[in-house]
Amino acid sequence: YIKAKQLGAVKKPILTVIDYTQPSSEKRLWVFDVNKRLLLFNTFVAHGQKSGGLYATHFSNTPQSKESSIGTYVTQNTYQGGKGYSLNLKGLETLSNSNAFNRRIVMHGAWYVTDEFVRSHGRAGRSWGCPAISPQLAKPIINTIKNGSVIFGYYPDKNYLDRSNFTHVA
Image 1 (tube, rainbow, N blue to C red):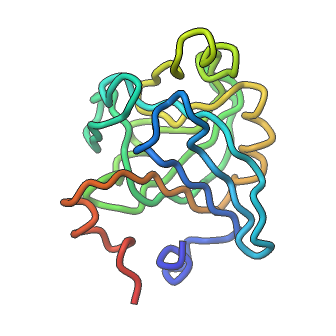
Image 2: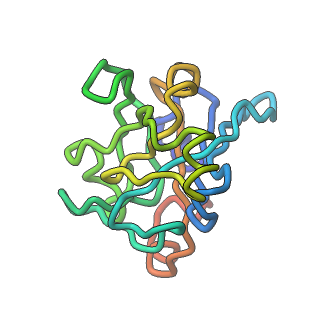
Image 3: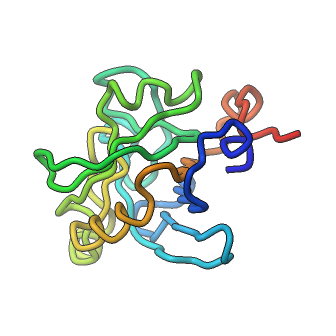
């Protein structure tokens, strides 16, 4: 968040964190108001079909990989698409997510990320790489984070952590 703010990418003091070390059966997405130091949302989030089953362990920046991408994003505009109300994401990291917009990695609601689905299947369903959330929370979360907030998708990939311009702040 701090590095993205230093670069002028942040327009809203909102930080969304996705912890991909947690299983998809856990609420592993948090939305924080940075200025107020307040937790706004905590919910389930899907990962890509090719990223893993219960746990996401594989990540990619490659088009059509159906894997999630890690790293720092800035949120952009919303649109009404095939998955309903959706949010464009711009990946800020060449190594891990710079192709997000062209890959159509967006935040959207999905029936396979509801509390009921997770309870009955023991995990969230999987997307084509998008951080999909419950349709009931899509509009309130997207409206909170749209237009210039930061999303950080975390996974302890040593290569990424050692080489990222965003994980080392001066």
